[in-house]
Length: 115
Image 1 (cartoon, helix red, strand yellow):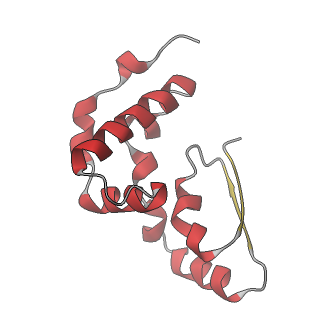
Image 2 (cartoon, rainbow, N blue to C red):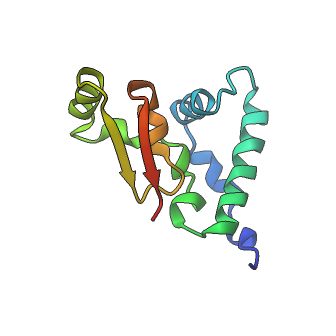
Image 3 (cartoon, rainbow, N blue to C red):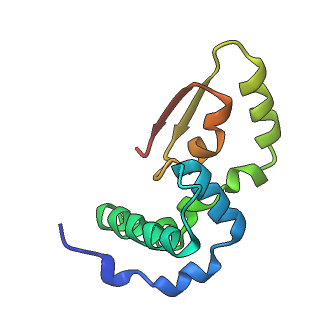
């Protein structure tokens, strides 16, 4: 497989917000790492993922944004996951599984697939 790393633009990291970093820290359990260590880790994860699939969402750092929380049905989905007996979360086409990472605290049965 040929490397796609040369298509990555580290300056796009400037779009990463403090909320994005807080989500990433929690999702990866890297709560004590300083901002530079987190940045280097995110850039390494991005390069590795982009070499597997050169999706634009990886290039733009979308994999660290908890954007599901802004979708209209999020609150209802979270309510169902927390109140139903043995709920299952199924996320299809999830690439880096960022929706599952956002909701994992609410459900113990998660299935995710990028295909």
